[in-house]
Image (cartoon, rainbow, N blue to C red; front, side, top):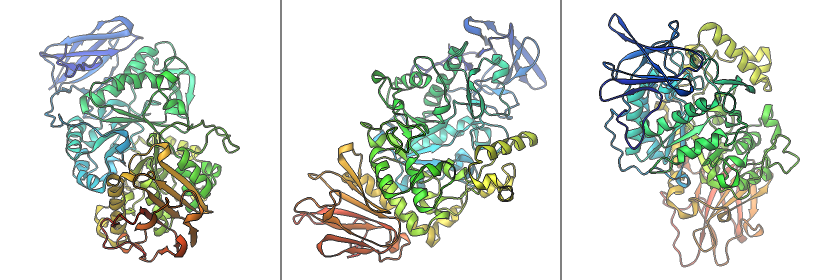
Length: 640
């Protein structure tokens, strides 16, 4: 067997031995499988032995790390390995043997980041830096750590066709994209991130395969798909039909391989609502069982799911899948409706009122299946801790699926953007930042591909149909303005401009993000919270208050005004009323000059009336006479 570490021995793919390599593949519809090894001007053909369940395997002497190979089925066509660890010549080229243990890790003392401390920074490797590589990301880890994030989340890195892609067209699920630097560079990035105190989460796709270079159906005889279920991408992956055991094992092994071979701290599971399985246990539950049973620190599993489905988070004993957290987009949708005026497509189901924003913050999601607005479904969030809801004001989907790739800061006024940022960063939920958000980046994030011409045309047409609920995709005249996903210029336009960080309109926003995240991590009243340790209330049509902490501990109050001028009698509302013997004192305002604001936001008037002259956010602290109040990183409290 292979020289496994920590009990990890891969069961499929090319597995290095002390002498040679063991090749193993699932090919249930053929009688014979050969592994074809490629050397300088020569091919070596070695038959594999049949095993139970449709597998074929054999140990081949003379092969080793760096060997290129394909599988030949019944003496005819050859294909890359479905479990290839490396595709240096692209999705159509031969696979390459990789020794999963040949890396000098330095993170032996790394203990991970618990869910309650998670502050996620989502990024796309290809557009995060000019280099567009894992090494390029590594050069910016200091920025992410200094910002105050605790984890970076990589959009999918599984190898894809061409040189640029969002990552959701991956076809070599075990092979880090050659365009990004391949396996060794990803390991270097993870190792370096851990040295910076950053966890690494990886976005993985188990609901469909990419359309170009996907040879898995050819090797499995199509058993990887099922007609029992359908997804937006066609036939669903077979998790509950004939032959599903090998498919389930393939996906589970993929997840475990990222954890064991790349030291990944957690996985973001793409579109779990499209992972369809009528069997018991559900593939998500089985996946969670296997991932959470890995020795050592807990590896996190975070679902992207639009159903507001509590079963994803419930313990196995209560019939749940026991995932750790879920993307909850209701807050994003309400905030865009409230501030940018979005009312098309799925935004038409949201109101953007302060009352509904407050309800969403208080519950974790808005659609709970109990109200008139819940026609689209939803379940109760009762009993689920705030940390289990991942909230954002933008992410790759909510920017990149807009026709022109507009960021939130492109569509709202700077003071509104700063106020929304404060709300996100000081909520008790798990905040997610989208790359460049922290300095209000000027660059869009567009949809881009690098498919063969005809496939590219079909993908573009399919995308227009998917988003036909939005007039920019539906109206032929407006559609002509949408950048061509296949054009190199579309990809290049999406790359962040790091030189703009020092420009005044961006530097102030960056200072705001750094200050707020420092406060979140250093002030007990702003840390992880249980359901009883925060309260939220509307203060008017476009204003709300978020109270953090407990009366016998540090108490903080965030007031966010999204429109116009307001006056709030703080003693007149239960959520904003000071604890007896205490008064509210300003700690920070999003309108401070150092954050790019005007400097004069308002203040607390007689009888405890809070005056906010414009859209902004102000953070207040409960002050008692015996306690001296200081303002972090500021010489004096704002608005005094």
